[in-house]
Image (cartoon, rainbow, N blue to C red; front, side):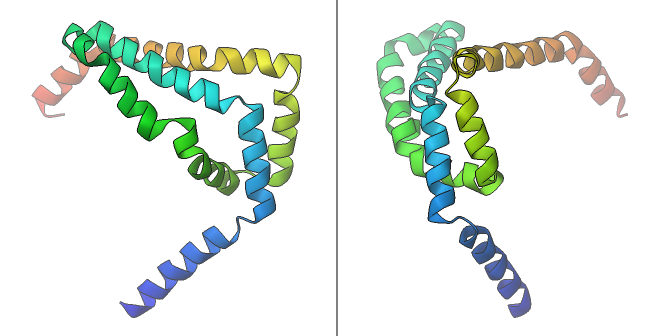
Length: 144
């Protein structure tokens, strides 16, 4: 049991030790180039609008819900955590290359469309699942 504790502890230390100040700085620079601040807050607002459209009873609470999400899930609130997440998953050269792309005209155009593309992709997946949902129910009912 003690051995497992040490293995887990050393693994965690290795994971966090690998994030140097330079790597975190590269991640922060990349997040800024991605306009993550604007995009995350816009995504939150749009997500809440969609929820209200699906459930009109939420309309009277829309302002409070929006405030709550922006308070706890805005870019400013999560900036440091996001930087660590990206720094863990990407190398400094990868982040620098992507940052350079994000600063191009094409990169900015793609970044502007990315939230909509992600939403449309999600909607597509939901529609496909809904269309075939009876197949899942039948399978579950038959015990297969």
